[in-house]
Image (cartoon, rainbow, N blue to C red; front, side, top):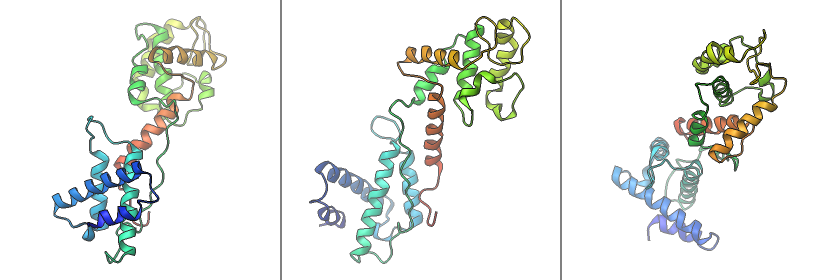
Length: 247
């Protein structure tokens, strides 16, 4: 009986059969990788395991996509559990996962927008119309960090250097769309279809709901901001060196 099988046998009574099968697949994949690299699992260093987990973060499953953050988190926890058991059994002199710190992945809201849905939303406004240019700018502003979304209707035309990534959309709206909407002097950025400054975020919220229906999702002023936060954190986790001893 291999050490992997011995470890699984210790969990047979407490684990659900599906959990047992998942543990078996994870350890089998890990053992196969050790064999391919000529790296005995019992001699794997913390650095080698770091490389392995990073490679898994960018590996693709049978359907061609990247593994979900929860799947990768489970794999790391299984490995840590296995090495703790092996150390306790005296099979290894030191536990290479001893200092692993594995915070739980951020869990998406049930209505969290996917990257594809965000892309679809950003492609919906008709940029040949002033309203379309305004709505495009609205969504690009929302798909970013740090904005007080309930204050969007108070934005002025004064440029903010922190918004550099959306400068082309901002300038296109000021140059064309806003100029065509404006009926009286105003420094407010967002104008209604009647050319008046918006007095509340209600119109903006209603516009987002209209676009959301077109892609089959429920939208509010914070939907794009929540999606940006989750997508950014997910990408950062893939780039980060995880886990680092003592981190």
